[in-house]
Length: 333
Image 1 (cartoon, helix red, strand yellow):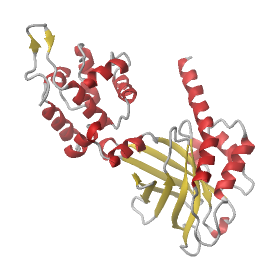
Image 2 (spheres, one colour):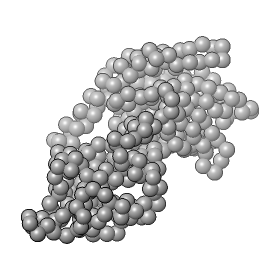
Image 3 (tube, one colour):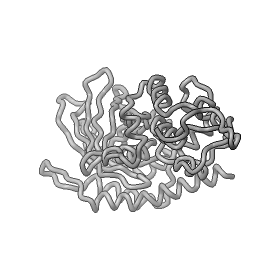
Image 4 (cartoon, helix red, strand yellow):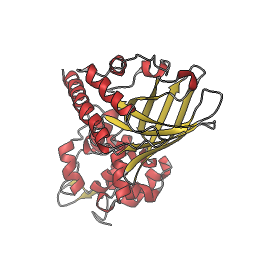
């Protein structure tokens, strides 16, 4: 175990002798599902808006070049990890004791927590898991309706992606059908050269599988294939459709409450605008989404080519970044 060998105070300097602060911060990030030091700072601000936690100083703390000197910050830290121990214990305890307290309190698997807190030893799968956390948010989903009663119409759905701490990333997909709300949930996984969602209906037998192109920052749009069976119709037909998932700046009550099936002449750009996304060129958005959804072949095999996905990325990245910057300016005003 590296670091000071005993807690308490250093008689030579009169300062608290801290234990493995950098590694404890990384363990804390793994617990929270935080990807960056900014994410960690946000967690400290949630428990104390006046916290002295600083992103730049945290860089030195995590490298072992310095350590926090204010007991109040350790008290904030104790609230963040919520293990029922005071701030002084966070500073003084052994790293093993710190990890064990977190695992006991939050029912975490120790090997998973330790693996995610060691960036230098992380596997490709671990790095991809971190990448998937950056997808957290709400998405408006557009695909072809499978029901024979709504043939040639688009169906709109909601996708919510949430970090679940050390347990990974969870996705929730829902459609407000005329009969009831259809909801699915399950893990998100980066595997091979694609992103996969294998979602099931809680307490039911519904299931859908999504194979999506690997997203790139800022993940303004996800796109790929959705496979499952018809829900409304005389027969449960195996079906596959292209699907586009547009990231919204914030959750939308309208997205959650509006009927899923869209009238034939609906403008997707107009629908996105009603959900809170600023659309500078509606015609370009309608054309881009329409081209993607109607692409491919009709011989039973529909494969997404990289240039099709890239066209959507080029279309929505500027929209997403402009929206994010506008929100940031509004928050600073």
